[in-house]
Image (tube, rainbow, N blue to C red):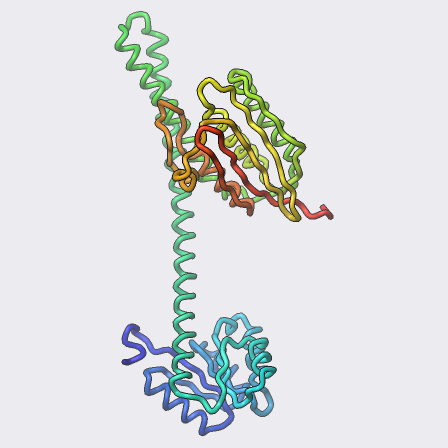
Length: 373
């Protein structure tokens, strides 16, 4: 079967060997299989050829005058223009130390002379396939990154542009109630109140979308005291904590590298989540604990709420995923997704453990500064 039936081009292979007979043998073998072949009798010629037009793969002998195959490979790997070219050594040297030196120089495979044609072809095809898959993966990652940037920009622009007309709608509904409320019947009051409530829910959704879209736009990380972060969060939630009679306990918290705005949002979202999903008839209790490790700290925010069923644990961080209706528990389904994005932006991980009817614990890691800071 022709090696290149599935492609519109021929793989370009550079053969480097100071023995003309070896060059002719390898060249004839590879040309027959559909490869495009280049030849070089010296290391200097090989490097010049690779720099002029990078081949897809290099077959490289070790024992050559002036410059050995080890030196050729080292120079190729030291140059950004040629460092990604896979190099397979083909040599009569079969000592383990020779193979170790070949891999240390940057080679990806080693074939001992005299070689079997089938073995050489198998190794070449294997490396070329790996190269193709790697290039495909790099391109897909670039496309995914571009798509994510466009999606985040779209979410930001749309959310931002929706706010003004929405404010006008809810504003006029409130004006109608204020100015003409005495003249309106019960049904009209109900309609206007529904408009206002729906507008307020939409406003929260827009604000959550903006927060989610902006997470990775704030790249400045600084040394922060999490005790001060928590102090600000508790101040923000003071009325809710008082109203719900929340018991909140915590230990002294460490300093971390982070964005102040984002970490306030992270802690506030998780604590609010624990308060919101309290069990009926049970006063909410939130406990914040930590485990310190070299280079990072594990935070645990535990509540005594309704808990999460095991089959739903994997999905709680998905955007717009909700376990309950908005009538049962208000929210937009973006808060936990934003928490995940914040933690990952800070180089950490976040996960959740829970027991239905007993409570939930959100765990996340953040980077702590080195002792020198």
